Length: 172
Length: 230
Image 1 (spheres, rainbow over the protein chains, first blue to last red):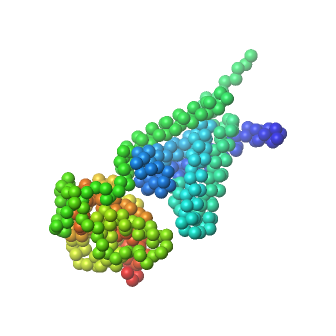
Image 2: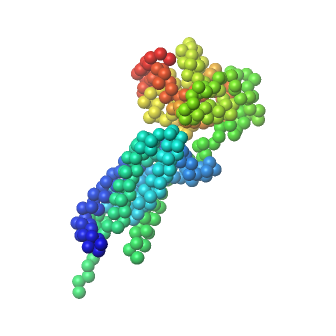
Image 3: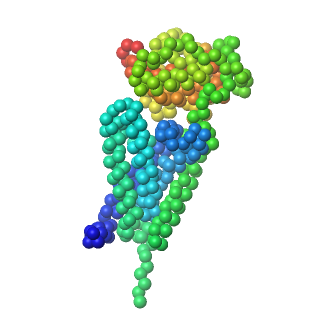
């Protein structure tokens, strides 16, 4: 077990897995976040369909519709630029772990209402890519979640932060 | 442990800065949202005006407490549909009636569309969807006005609304309530008499699927695709 962890550490030390994860997650969040920023009311309507907020909690619903798209864009840019990678990875991980169960539950609700096979369900989950097949969406979200977890765990050196401010090593 | 605390702190900073950027960007956007506005406030919750003169309009603020009787004249629009889509459409139609407004069926809308009064602007159609959807295809001669950002087009549309004998408002169709919310806005804020406000609950989706002509781009662009039988 420790040997496998050591192997993963060595792979991580090359910086390649981290770089790939950053770029994939960064581009995905930039794309999906930007799509939402162009139609915040459309996004608000999709949030409402999840029925997470009671009607009287509309201020919170508005805040999510305003903040989330730009937060996704911001996270995407930070990841691509390699700034605050682990902290941003943690934010993205938190988002993915929150959204995925909610999307799954909504798909179950649609399945019950429409009496379809689960993988035949396609709907606009508010994720920023329009109408998507639920099974494909869950696979995609699982992949993005794993990449975000990798960024939190990884201690790579291929980031802009490290390039601009390399850690000083003391020489005795 | 200290390393993890640093990562958590970093993530909190990202959230705070990202939210700050979002709030600033929202204020500067034409399509931004108002934080304290309830965009889904039930339309029927505000009193409407008496309907003694069905062609009259009222002034903003001149709203009596009497709500017109729920319109029962239209036959159930989607009664024949037993599907989930039919149930959704019936729900929207019920909301329209509860708001004291008149739901219209496709054939009724088509009749108004082909009436010469439509060409003379006595009948006015309002597309309550966003600009992108409007440009992708709308009912020919329909104006665009949505309840979210009415300021974008209201100045242009208002004179036609105030002079109209009948106003037909539609959005996408299905469970879309934007036509209802826009009707509520016209009634409660612009002061249009609810007796002339009609909501086409089938919306653009039904209009196009039943072969209604569709205009792309700006209003009166001339880029019209004529469908089959209506």
